Image 1 (cartoon, rainbow, N blue to C red):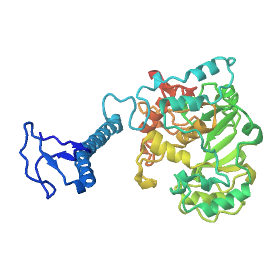
Image 2: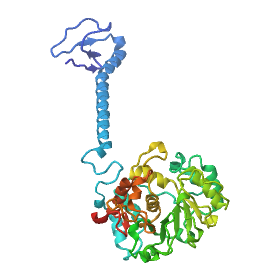
Image 3: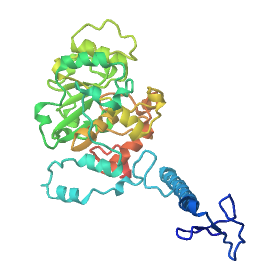
Image 4: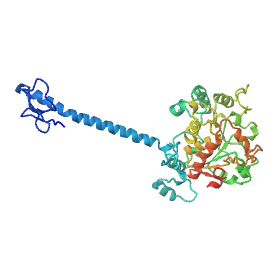
Length: 416
């Protein structure tokens, strides 16, 4: 290989072959492949500059090549990292959950912190810490209900109901100006640590005598029209809030609890219009657009009504359960059950989370679906919007990792 070298004093250059008018005469190539050329004195500085430029060209090419190789290497390895969910040696599944959630551990500082608490004391931030341990993408901050600042929450602005508030801002503003309250309640909002239980409607609650244990939680969340009166021994008597939608709301006013929050989980634009009639106590002239009969009156003051943050539906569906995105529109099998939505809400807003009355055992189609009626388990298979099997996988992860406690053991069954 021909060598290239420059010296300032001798104004010599060694190049691969003679070229240009600056050489005084052709010189033979010396042994080793070198060529010596002398520039005229008046071109000494310029010649030396050209010499340095020629000397730098191989270095520049070398570094360009090195950078290209590094870039290709980075893309290759980053691609392997991004595809880890598809490989057999990954620790996480496609949703971002640990493949073995029961092996998740808390940071040592939290282990010491919780270990120093008295037995039975509420553990601040426990559910969120456990959730983050098995799902590192979890971010706790998400308000429970919509408030006048909801437009700042960009995650819901780009989706239409049920996953967001797009095109519903005007009516939501009207509703929020009437309700004027956006928290759970002054006493509960001021608590440093809250325990919450989401009471499902499953038939597994029957004859379990869990009523007193359920009532011991700071926040008791109930769903749709599931009754309390007459079932206190099994489901308790306390209701902090009842989350529902028009078709699921209690229709007989006498069945409402004396004190509880009425929380709308809107699944379609029409649900907000229905709530406006309830808030302003206006007569509902038509029920067109609803898939079954709806409540025509809710015996609650506007200050006791709330709108559930639709982000919890969005997160439960697309991120946690992994249901079809369907371009952000409601479609077949991409809507989580209200119970899964309520659990997602609790993970963001409660320090400890428990559930009761959850779990669909498809192997017992004749078992009661709900604790308060005779509909059988087989009816859930006819659901158009829910994916019960995928949802059960999600809840099972939470139970196995200790993120939530299942009082009726319907989610895990004999598998835990």
